[in-house]
Length: 276
Image (cartoon, rainbow, N blue to C red; front, side):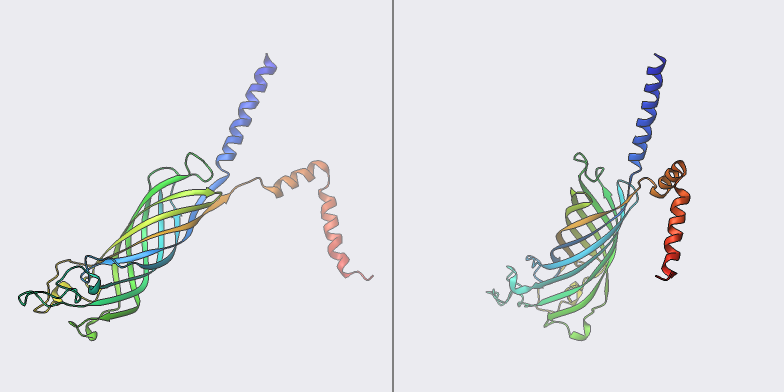
């Protein structure tokens, strides 16, 4: 009976120790990912029609815990608009007004391309564990602040002069919703939708207060832009295992091979200088 109790005691100790080692075996450090998608904008030009353009990007995420992450995001975004695509007869030149009392058509268009940088706080709705069938999927929500820096722009504007165009930095306030699924090991696939509010009404080089007499007025407020994308990410993991050097040293101490290994290593080093 005493032997059975001792055996049970050591079995429990060994199981607890093995469990603790397993829990400390992997530590999540962060995540990196790449993605591709489509982007568009909402503003004054062709407000009832969205024109989508390709977008590309990457991100790095630092995990605070299982539910919170800090994310730095980069995306190369293009958005554009044209009144000729609108169904509004006040602004589409292909649908001229039938009455002289109606405002004349505008026929404005633009295209803008630039770098979007943002820093966001990311919140997971459920726990996410690599390789675990019960915790390999999670939706998440992100929000933060960012900037859009224009690199290339085209416009056709018969209302304002080119000297009035601005191509500097625009402040944005992104809101991002997505989901992530662990495929195998540290690899995941994800999909996202990001909507960005801005502090500017001139992303399309046209604002509400720049409307001249004879054109349909606009009251849309500041412009916004958004993107939909899908991508692949990789979890940065720190794996803790047994200390091989320590185990080898202990093994040598018990087997008496420590001095032999040192001697053989020194002999190998000095043998390089011996004449053959």
